[in-house]
Image 1 (cartoon, rainbow, N blue to C red):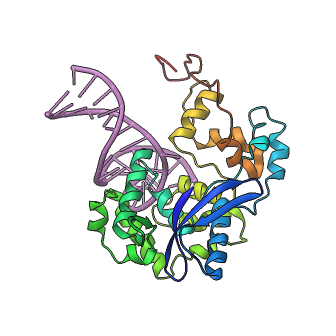
Image 2 (cartoon, helix red, strand yellow):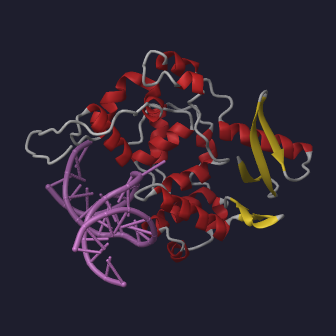
Length: 271
DNA sequence: GGTAGACCTGGACGC
DNA sequence: GCGTCCAGGTCTACC
């Protein structure tokens, strides 16, 4: 994996992370001072969540055939961004849009406001909240952010002004429901976004219920019948604090189309 | 607390 | 080429 990282001094470096038999090999394309090396090592450790321990989840997953692949594959970690602000913005960009659109929104934001890497000006680090905060709604709309523009602007300005303490949330020991409530206060972040961000923070109690979740759970567990958040949570309730991991890494193979079903009040041509 | 409707944009699809 | 639908939801008003 290769990406731009900006460290505290403001310098932008291009970092490459590669698998190594002894762990993770991090290399930079520039010569770095020792303090910068430490900072980037911490940054990459956060991105790959290297301190996480998934042994308790694996112990449960070993007992479920559709999750038994988790331990041998080392599943559990979710790649995250260097800052929580970046992840909040990206999650906001996943809402009510297709994946190609999400990538387009983030790319345009980075091109417009990101700090360029000195050796290649077309390579940029993700912009700071302060940089986005200094722009206006019309500019964000021109970048394609549409109705999300005021949310993004409020978020960036809130972070820049210290109204939203995202660094504090990153390390917060508060219980998951309380942490979820804090995330729900962020503009543009609703139940789906909060659940996704909780997962990135290592809290897997809540499932981000989106159209994919509805479709997959409906086919696999409810014979194609329309389902809502309650039904989805009921399916994964037994996984307790690992609900989201169980959902995310569930082996859905073999789940194509449920049998044709007629349920109360509705007739279906196909399930 | 639950529900309905508005909201940007662009890709997919049917005609 | 054009029109319609809808996608890895959220917010607000209303009941």
